[in-house]
Length: 363
Image 1 (cartoon, one colour):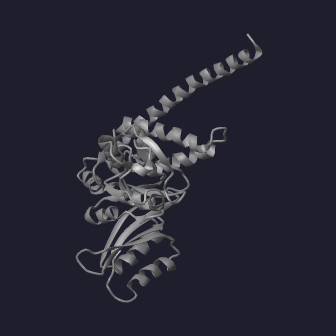
Image 2 (cartoon, rainbow, N blue to C red):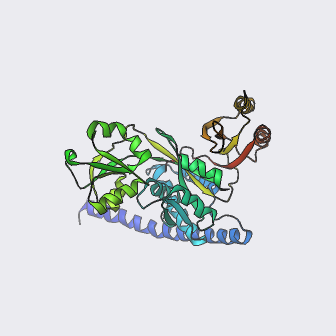
């Protein structure tokens, strides 16, 4: 046996020994998780805790000194937590389907692969199924870095009593999928409207005369092309793999770094962490200075707004609901006082939840 072979044998023996220890420790960790699940069940507490999830990610990031990057360590722990959550209580989580959509990808990034992902045909359906407790949580898109708000998500917060429980950010890259490789022969493209808009410049430059057909999701676009053998789909590479489509063009989004923010919705509330965000929606009297007074309240309290959006009141012309996100947790005395002041200035006020910020953790 050569020196190299002898060295490899020794190194592999070391790995085999470590694997035995690692598996034993993982299973021991899972045993503790099962006991935690029992205590949660007896006390009526939620099984999934985004505050605890954030604590674990922060801890393992600090403990990781290489050679594996921290992102890999977090991915490993995500799957371990996914598996232990499934031991505690098999979670059912809804998303805008079918499988292969960006919402599906975001769900997997957040919860891992051990939970039951349940596709829904629309964002309102995700909300309704969670509200009726047929699903534990839902994952829904709320805004995109290039196209702005997802209106149907904001509207459903007005129609249900569901809360924001967590958030995540997902980088979005679109591919052109299908069977037709000659772009000159393509007559139509399928895709979700907001996705089509994010690729408008590429479409205009390369397929200026095609019919653009809106679908309920990017994955549905891929599914239709797979079934009809007609046109091309704007979707993810994962959708192409699921529906056996060829990648005709890759990275066709107009802006690099295109990102969508997703929310985890449910009926539970997250405890306070070191870095939290709060979401509210309100309406104000239709008179001069009303919105200014609300914004001044935040300014005077030195509270940072991270988002403000408006949606029209459908029953009153030219009046609006305002959605605001800001840094802080509702249980913090300063934030509690601020919310009481804001509420007193509003005709309608609704707290949508306080939850850990996604921070710098990738999805």
